[in-house]
Length: 402
Image (cartoon, rainbow, N blue to C red; front, side, top):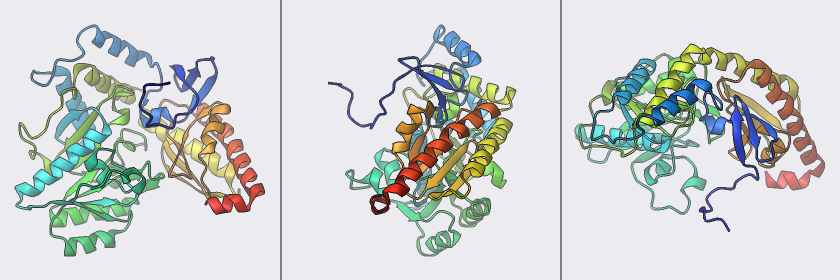
């Protein structure tokens, strides 16, 4: 009997070693990693520069607490400010905590402006975390169910619907911020149109709301720019980050500028582990390697190769609804639940996952090259065709499950 709490439906594989974009299980079987620990392992596995930096830092100091000066935290904050274009960074340990900080920034911003009960516009199908506040902001009843009463102060609208936001602006004077995932990861790789993001920003500017861009999963070079909002050509006020920020070392950051700059004062927020020297060394080294190895351009090149290969191989295949995404954040939507494909992938030596029940999610390490990207296609396509063909043969039972 395991004493680990039963909160995950784990696959029957344990990875014990990784090298580049390859993983190895206890029996030595090799797997091509097209998930990167859910967009975490930016530099793949066992990157020599990251290993050296972290090993060196462990031999110096790992933690001292935010009661004292932490020079590496200043260095990491400078790096993040440079790539975001924003001004202040709060360090924490996860995307959930970064989003929780963003929600607190919005509420404090509202109170500072005399709004007694600040509200935040959030999107259907969004995922912002599993704390009580972030699951309340999340647009998934599956995540929320069983944890009511939810935290109040969130107004939900459809993604890519500016008119819905305008209607909220007209009737709800408590709104102080818009909180959007530019590409919804858990929701099924749903991509915000760039003109929609620009329109949201215009509404926020006119209403003096905060524009909060949750880039926990879609940010940090995965789409070919550092952040999705940079494709749209403007600066948000709040940007939560985590996942790939230190390529596997747990770290999150809530980055602010514009109308959100200076909202937090001493005592308004804090973290025991957040910003410790080990995590900060991971941040600095990860961002330096990304620049030195030109991984943003690589994300475009390899992402295009994977997407193009999938589009060509799956064109006209009954059951394939859409292939979508940006850079190395891709989804293949099928017309039926397809969770069993994950185990089929593992049997074939390919790691990916399924989100929103029927969307194959691909989030490879940003160090993946074009040859390896083509191998993802070569391994995935036969699995999809086999799965869909089996479903077509079963017919009515699959249709009923959809």
